[in-house]
Length: 347
Image (cartoon, rainbow, N blue to C red; front, side, top):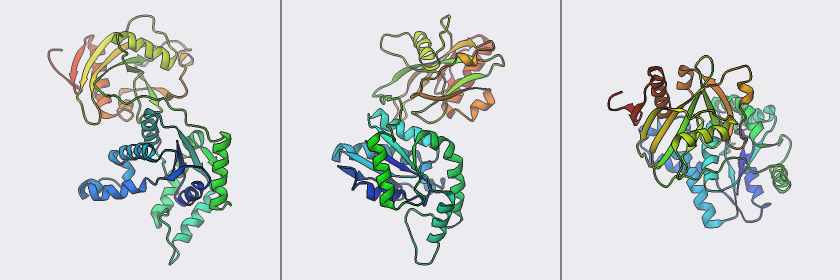
C-alpha cells in the first residue's frame, strides 16, 4: 500500500512522513525527490533545461511508479510518500500506473491555513534557516497560487488534514487515525493492467446537434479520450465499441456504428502499439441527451462535448490526429486507413 502525503511546499509533508513511519507498522519512507536528483545526472542538460519542474518529465513520472513498485516488492508493507502533486493529469498517470500493478493508494492532503504556509515560507528565508521542503524566494510564493488553483480537485480526491496548529507528530497521528478508521480510503481508480503485447482498441465518436464530439476524462491516465477501450478476445471491434459506450456512458446504441478510421499505432517503448478503430456512433439528440449519460465513478471523472478546435487542446497529439482524420472521413462518407495517424493508400 502507498500512503501519499500531498500538500503545498511548507505544509510539513516530509516531517510528518518521518513521524508516520513510527506509527504504521512495517512502513518505509520513500521520497520521489531522489528520482529528480538521479535525473540530473542521467539526462542531458539540454533536456533538463526544457522544463522548470522535474515532474514535467515523463521519465520522472514513470520512474516514480516503477521505483515504488520495485521497493514494495523488496521490502513489502507500506510506503509513505511525501510529495507535492498539484497537476491532476500527473495524479492520474501515477496513481493509474500503481493501480495497474494492483498497488492501492491512500491519498492524504495536509491543508494548513494559507497564512501559516506563508509564515513558514518567510521563516525559511531567515539567515541560517533551511529546509529541503521549502523553495524560498518568489517561486515559493508563486507555488501557493498553483496550490490554491488545485484545491478544487485535491479536496475531492484526498482526505484533508488541517495541520495549521499541529506538531509533525500530531499531524502524523491524525493521518494514522484516518488510515486506521478508513476516513482516508483507498483511491477508487480502475485497475487496467499494462499491455504485454500489441492491443486492438475501439473508440466511438458521439456527436451533439452542433456536431461537437463527446470526450471523457479517465481517472487512470492523463488527458481526455474517446469512449471505448480494448477489444476482448473473440470480440468484433464494432461490438466492443457498443459495449464500451454502454459501460462508460450508460448509453445503448441502436445500431452497429459505422467505421471511420483504422489507425496502426507503432510501438513506442514502453508502449506496444496496435490497431485503433474509430466508429461513428451518431448524434445524441433531444433535450434529455445529457441526462442519458451516466459515468462509472472509479473509471471516468467527467465528460463534455468539444469542437474540433477545443479537442486539440484536450487530447494528446496522436489521439487528436486520429480524431481529425475521423472527422474528415465522416464528412466524406468514407473510411480512412492510417499509419501512425497519417492516411495511407487511396481514400
